[in-house]
Every structure is written in C-alpha cells, then in structure tokens.
Length: 315
Image 1 (cartoon, rainbow, N blue to C red):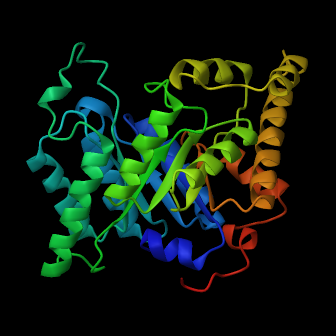
Image 2 (cartoon, helix red, strand yellow; image 1 turned 30 degrees about the vertical axis):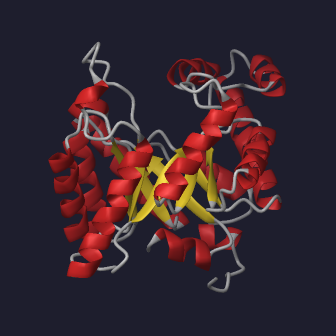
C-alpha cells in the first residue's frame, strides 16, 4: 500500500526492518524470523542497503522475494552513495515492475572498503536530491502507466531525534530535513532512540519548521550490555538514559535478566509513544523476532491491528 494511503487509513503504522543475509546460516535465521513476524501483520517491512555494493544485489533479491510471496509489503532502502543516475533508474524500474509500493531514500554512509571515496563521483550528493529524482521518476511512470499505482512509489526519508552525527548545527539539520520533505518525501522514519523526550522534542521542532508529514519512531530493543556497547559504536551519538544503564548494570552477569530489562524498556517506550499519538513505530529487529514478539505480548496484543483500532477518514 502506498505510504499516503497507509497514513490516511491507520492511526499508527507498525513496521519492521531487516537486513539482507550474507550466508546460508544467516538466511535461514532471517526467514525463520520473517515467518514468525508475519503473524504480527505489520503494515510494511524495510530492507537495508549496503554501501559500495556490499549487499545491494542481496537487497534487491530479498525485496522482490518478499513482494512475490505476498505476506509482507517490502520497502527497500535506496542510497545516494556509489551510484550513477543510470544505476538508480535501473533499480527503480526493477522495483516498479515488481509492484513495490514504497522506498526509503537515504544519503548513505561512505563505504568502509573504499577509504577516501570521493562523493563527487555520485550522481546525487544529498538525500533531498535523490528524493527529487524519485518524484520525477514517479511522474514519468505515472504518465506512462509503468507502475500499478499511478502515483508511483511512496517516499520515506530519515530523521534524527538525537541529532544527525554529521550536522552538529541543529538548526541547519532541520533545514536539511525540510529540504527532503519539500522535494517530495511522504513520511519520515527516525533513527533509534531510547529517551522518548528526544522524539517529542524532534516532532515539535518539525512542526515549527513547517514539516507536516507523518513521523515514524524507530525503536530497537536492547537485549544485553554488549549489545548496548555495539550500538554505541554503530550509531554515533546514541544516548543511553541513566535509568536504562543502571537497570542493565543491576542485571550484569545474568543474560536473561538483561534481556528482560531491555524488552521492558522498549515496551514502555512503545506504550508511551502510542499514548502520545505517534504516527508509527518502526522496529529495528536485527533479523531476530523474539524481542519484537515479546513487546507485542507485553502490550497485550497479538497483531498490529489491535494497536490501531480507529481508522482515519481520508484527508
């Protein structure tokens, strides 16, 4: 379903993120998780995209497979890094022919295997440039009938409640986000965060900047202190609230207790977000299903529809 229809239909959307597996064992783990998460009936699932070609073909294959199977609606990531316009167009044409409904357009990180890579070689320097190209592509295929939906694909972009690590100036950061929305983005999916006040402040600042598209909150359940340390390395600038650190420290030496602490924290984040009318929750699953399924159970539901019983009138 196109993003605009999703947000016009549901009071809140629920979605999961996967990354393409690189080994047979990882693939088996992913498809087991997918089979378990299907029962939760999310509105869509996103599939990440490796920089410098590291997992790009795997992403395309996973997206098309999910669409063909028909149980989950895939939303692939697409980045600017290491791409010429012809390559982007080829990817979009493949997705259009497969009937993909939505794409998450990202600037992307420079590939680690290409130190000193010159971004000047890329067709699109910023995510806003890519969004503008996607909108023009949508207009073109809409006129030609080259997509099942005459509007083409819905376009999502990233937001950073704790601040973009590459943009210390928070005023300019909001200008950059508004540029993506003005270029044609339909919705925003945030980077993970662990303090809901950061999200609410971000949402308020979006409103002050004239950004009115739906904002989906990114949630990642922590299941261990080692996972917290890895996340601190992976997502620069991530802040861990002192109460969460204290709770993890109390459970030190007991992996099951730490897992329960992390699940409880994420559950309370979700409950509070729903109480404050969040437009969507996006779970970063790390290709596992247990934590997400437990959060649903803690919230007292078996599937996403129970978390959004009221349907919006189209407007």
